[in-house]
Length: 446
Ligand SMILES: *[C@@H]1O[C@H](CO)[C@@H](O)[C@H](O)[C@H]1NC(C)=O
Ligand SMILES: *[C@@H]1O[C@H](CO)[C@@H](O)[C@H](O)[C@H]1NC(C)=O
Image (cartoon, rainbow, N blue to C red; front, side, top):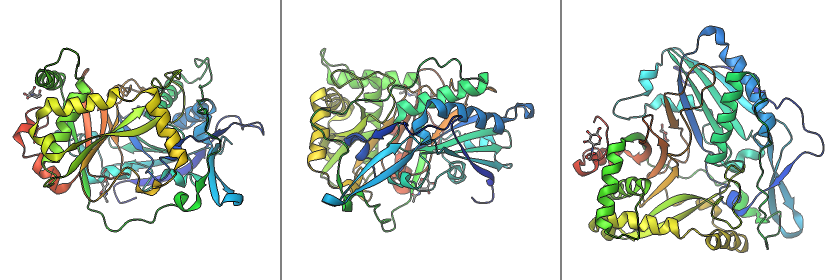
């Protein structure tokens, strides 16, 4: 783990009651299976240090055990079934109560201020505060679906976690964190009155379990040396956002279309990053994670548990993107978002099943740098997750899926602000940090 962060113990935390033989098994949808070879997301919350009487580690473990009783899919395992008759494999989540892994670590020399750099830079030791090195979702066949690391720092605590994307998406994960924190602070799970709603959306016309050619299901070999990416957190104040939004809307100049804050901010990031990507022409893509819950017909419950996302893209030529202004870029994003209808979601799933291929290419080329990939959301409730000794002071994404152009969105700590954790190749980042037009709209101290 390196010198600054020392692993004290590692254990398995199981749900309070072991499930019986009638336990739930969850079939996976095209939305899940499409993420098979993608790195499992890692997120972490930074807290002030609790009073020693709080017994933070034992309380976190005890409450986790109660939380896993409710959110039982996280305590299950991914199972790969070989279909010998057609040389394919299928996957399912067996909610067998095997449990989540819990690391307890210490970093006596690292303080909160080491992590919260005023310029938004992310120190190298940050990755040691996260529990997993290079987990891909397909690794769930041998590894727990949820791995946590609680690190006691000099004057704070960091709770880092890695979750298998086949089990949950951001909406479901934050729902879990919120429930866990409430159980931990109150000491009981009696306030939870209803079980989680599992998605029962098995798409008409799709036969489950889905069969995947053996070759597509194998874990891809680690690729050749890839250029190193660096992370930076860009903070957009409420004022920065409203200025960008006003600029984008005035450029669009249409009374029928309103560019949202999020579209304006991410359009600004897209243009600024591509401007420094060294591309001489060709196309660029804006890829965004789309939540299907409210798009399908009939809609799913807003808090229904599982993974209900897919990735869609807007395409532009580099020339258009750079020459036609913020409003034009935001308009392409707005059109992309409004085209995500019930038909589009269903078509994605049906096409996927009909032609399972290229799973291993993941979300795109790691060597070209011609896209941004926008995930996370400023709507996730982050700062109200109080485990009993105070609210989080920051949130970060961990390593994994290091692709130049990856943007993870979080709410900023001040109401109405947005943080964008951005992964970029070092040279792109250096140029971006020297770009006055970019910096005018963000608030970092360079
Ligand atoms: C991946 O990203 C992390 C920061 O999130 C960084 O510390 C690490 O060096 C990166 N690895 C590569 C190979 O780019
Ligand atoms: C963005 O926010 C920073 C910090 O508040 C401020 O200095 C800068 O002027 C803002 N830019 C715009 C265009 O609002």
